[in-house]
Image 1: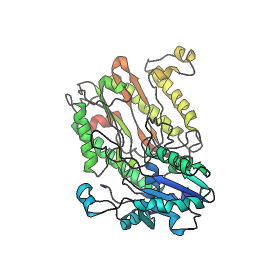
Image 2: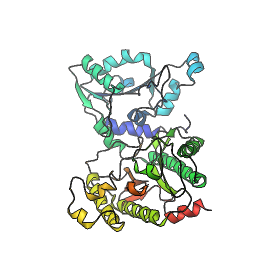
Image 3: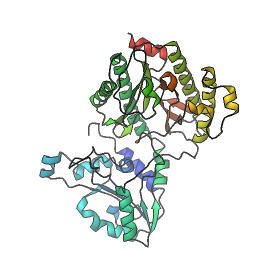
Image 4: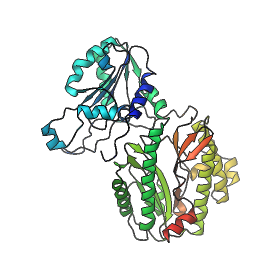
Length: 429
């Protein structure tokens, strides 16, 4: 891995939090992700299962974590199974964890080779009454193929039909949404790399530059700072392209007089950052661009003041919509009559601000969390209002990461330039 080894105390803590939530006489089994085929014999870069990583820190393919705190076989109360390493594997695929290294990374003291799994797991399952299995229950997910966890769940239900099966995901969603100090430190490293990337772009962007050249500058800065890469495919959108919410072609030209929207995140040690900034291609906002920009910034600042413990995410979105209404009226984009006659299911402001303002952040850029339960201290969210005016070719979204604290929230990206005048000053210095 490019990143420094994470303190295994994080994973020991995470496992203890998880196992404390299990029913008596239970076993929980977690699998690494598939290696996904690209074309021919090529595969996509491996990305670890987020839950397995959160529980173990093991960041390689072909591994299984077994947690069974009441198991009479002591060495199987926490057991990790990894791919066997040998000289031939090193020649072809490079280094993989040894058993000792896997112990050091995870804090799990009983580490075995994968070929021992079937022989050891059968008795563990027979001792247990409940089997906790893990599926991707992120409510943003849209999965069209039978992925590894799903296939495994079907196999286990066929093999052990008389056991009680339980869902690990609801437990993990609640636990993972509260960030520990070590996790916040890792997220702050990601944020620091995002800051360096933005400083780089402020000096690079000028009329005539291609969007893909900007994308190249982004990944250069990420890899230079030991990131795994992008936490999601970056959006580099100039002019009217910024009005396409999930624009990823990044093949246009940054023209004089246009705005450039960059929505990009860092994957550092499997923890994501997510930041959006908008800059004038020629280094100077027009009067109208600055007017719209400052309206978005005003909504972002107002939205941050609403983020605090006890708030319901869906109610918060409605409150942010009310903040946006005022700005859109002041901009002449909607009228009070539009608001008075709006469809409550699709308020008038949605014509220019059609997406939500905040999502959970963590290991995944759209991280897991219970969106219908109140916010708690330790949760991290994006804050990203936007205004998109297709007829004017103006698309502006501003996004920072926010940590919920005991009495409000802390903007983790407050130190990264976002004021329009500051951005102009930096671009022209």
